[in-house]
Image (cartoon, rainbow, N blue to C red; front, side, top):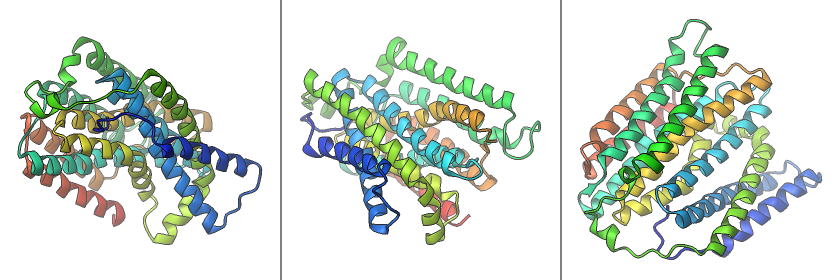
Length: 366
């Protein structure tokens, strides 16, 4: 969650969702066109609706406390991500079989390389060395690496269907395993071993930090506007979906880069919260936010997209190509090496950022 010491709802977090809802209403009344200025306005309102949704999820999370706060934020981000993916899939002529794969892969890579790298560099620069709980971080990485392998690597090697795809039975099994592992993880995180994911007791800065949680009234207000913001994001994504391909083609990027754009937009607000936590010397909260968003991205997106594909008769292509598979394996391996010792420095952050640079380059220039 955010590192702000004062919890509350700024004016923009109330006004922006209402404006986004108004824009959606105008569109369904037939008063919007495809004029570039109107498209830019739609993109702007989509972005602020995403930020508003994450802000309200943060505030509700601050009310219930850790680790539930990070879970609420991760689920809210995943709802946004699934909404964007579903809108693009339904808008695509062939069902967009690779949109889900590209978005989930990009989300995992952005978190493991870009977000964690930035948090470790900025936190390490300010506080030299930061400590995290190995017990909690290892749980994240174990589940995340398993789901990433099942969803993004294993489909390349199955033989029942041609190409990087699963058969119906295999896809159903992958969706079941994703939900099962995520539910088991939530049980461990919130009930059985909740202390694994709390801030280290020897983190003096975190212990001395004063945080005023929001009141019950503020939390209820945020819950209401969280729903409004999420609805605005999904509906605006539906409006903009037909124009995304045109934008990608105009810039000259490969079609797969759509996943990077969606993941970056969805993760931007949560990334800010994670960086703030790292700068405030709360590295465990930072790791919870980062890895929690990546874990929820796979565990919740795959089952939902499986249902959408079943109803729309789309053959999902989940396996990533060899170059991306190599980068994904490297990112998971390096995350284990840098995070599991429990102490991080600037050097670890630069290692992650170097992989992030190659991820962006390969995504833009395959």
